[in-house]
Image 1 (cartoon, one colour):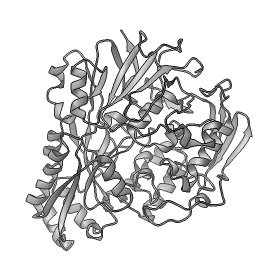
Image 2: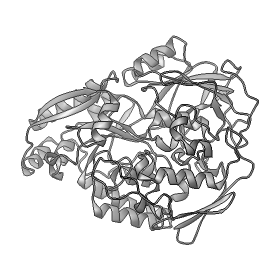
Image 3: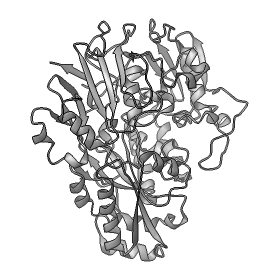
Length: 536
């Protein structure tokens, strides 16, 4: 699963449908009206393009999941990592150099055989900073990354460099390549299940912009006809997929509906087969669809994000005061199906600690004391919220009222489209606080810490940087023993909690409605997956 920034009200459930491992077998292609077809509603703005290497949002990766196959994935029954396109993934003794061998006989949907060169060239394109592809940060640990990503002013795009390839990527033969990392990284094998590492065929690599709306994947589904932004994305099973665990469906349609309540009502009207339950319906969904709902275990994490680029929020004591002034139990009850957060890591992760956060209790007296010690706050606290969410303003005002009543702060609210909030934050122009959420791409607490808290993390929502935390993360990366690595990563979480660029709010149990003809797959390891539904 992946980033949800500035969009409290677009649930993490959209991010919980990303693991690519199913129980069905490939079958002949069927049209959109085939016997086994489903329409999946996504409560988000329509996609502008489909390119998993340039997409780190849940909606886009959800579509890419159907069209692209990863190297490895998480088995929904055991939680173990299993191979998909990879034949083997082998580290050296230090976990610094990894050798990846592909299975033979796989191809892209244009007929081109899938080779190691496709991965190497696709990864080099993504690692080139001047391309400004969203999954660039995934390659920051690979040797040669720094030469392709020169120091750049915060929020700016790196200038083109003469270096076009990562020195750490080496072709061995048609089906084998190696990856040398700058430092040892024991979790690297787990990262290979992220679809941001998917390969692009040669013709797409030559002109990516020409294929933004006609992607060529290597997965179980391909586009059924043409697609333009705003249209439903209609996919049909691809006969050429020889990988394991193809979904049972013959055809899948993704329908983007920006308003979550509207999407929910579309389900009740019978026009879609699967939908997330929005925050406004958590009290009623079981009676609205008594025979067609499922829930996931609580997972992911939701935060209040403070802008590290704004000097007014620099003092950690001020951030601690904000956190202590929030009644998480009351806020979680307002959100529904939620539990108060006590750390930065999702509760479904190995290494989660129920008492990690020292500043997540509700303590008004302590909050006032710390605010005074921090010198108070100058001016107005703006809380930005997503206007596409029916509950965005409600949740923003709930947090604002706590800050106003418990700390005496002046608070105002700024409603914007989620995309505008993200753009302003990415360019360090957003004034005030915003909501954010995170779900792991691979089952490691490292994936909660590196992207959001490392200095160059590709989802560093707040613009936070602490060399001490970077150093501890590197120590965890270098620890080959998984259990020992967790202990080191927990030290990094402690540093981030002390600095508190993100204030933990809650973890959510996600709920979904499904039509009578399908049964979504439910797994404690991979969440609820509509794509891998069984048909009745």
